[in-house]
Length: 533
Image (cartoon, rainbow, N blue to C red; front, side):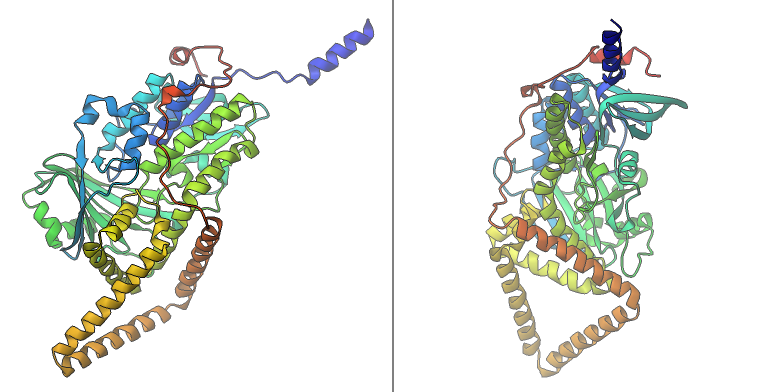
């Protein structure tokens, strides 16, 4: 009898008794990435808690443009069925301006299953709709909760938070970090804050009394705002989101305060001023930092995943983030359902999500990163703006070229298509043509004019070279960055040889998923009534 008693005690000692869990999954952040993953996980039958430090509806500084690929994600989440969504402003065309002069004006290209339009939806509305979709799917929503860190144990992850100045601890099987560019979850997982090299800064304001086409987004470039751009995105017939953004680290460093820069651009850019003639500023000019993609940083750890802005899923070239937030939230949910079903939340198992993100995004982000590294050198701004003229000139006369380059800008076409022999060849052809045409035009004006043109070009080249060499350390850092980004791009080109860049199939509606395993002891609604302390 004593033998069996000792055997029983040894068995009990070895038996892992799961701790009390508040949820299967805690999602830190109720923005597009967090709401997207929460809605899918909850619809699959899992217990989900969404934590956000703000109360919804709440404003979020953004350009507000929601592209065609993001609209497909919204449809799968059921958001497009709302009457207030249907009344949101449709964007069917875009125009590109340089120093107040229109370079090109095109309708949104048609690509695959995607709609040939976008929408401009203020984040006050969009994020509220998405969180409602998560709530409708069964997720518990806890607002006014600030996540402060987490700790991973053998059989759960404990999330440390604060609510109304009181400490809160929540235990779950999995934590999804979707808490934005200043993510606490990301900083804890990766052990450091994002590098300034991977930061974009931007400001935006809303204007009433705006004129011009309500279905046209305008993008503006000038030497003052480069490396970056400013925009006017109509949110309704006479209202618009107007802003400016650029990379944080430039050579030489950018001295302009972006709020002052935006005010100056509104006054000095003739194309923008025309649309804002008689318009009035509503509210304040507000700014925000964005953390862009860095392939060297981890996306998962044991029982933890990063999505959206927290993962750095922001295109450094155009600042696009909503599309990547919604898509990565879906990818994370799909991986999590399988991992939770097998009760394997190890980093090795969750790596399936990281691998998918790498496969889908890394190539395009590598190309965007190399371009941004090149243009962050402001000494070469005239060169970059001339390249923009060449691309626009080709797009005006070549519909296929316009469809591809416009699709890349709108997030409809993989950026890798810009490296195709077809696009590169036509770009080079246009550059040569423009150079020859410019030389011929100067020659027609007489030998003296041609000589002055050549002398001016030579003087500009010498001046640029002298300026670059005046700060050898900064120049070396810039070149090292080009080498690093170029190596990353070469790696991705090699990895994708022979693969096509077709747009993925539409996401399945959230109600179509079914979890393979569920271990709930309480209904999601119970989270709202019981204590979480």
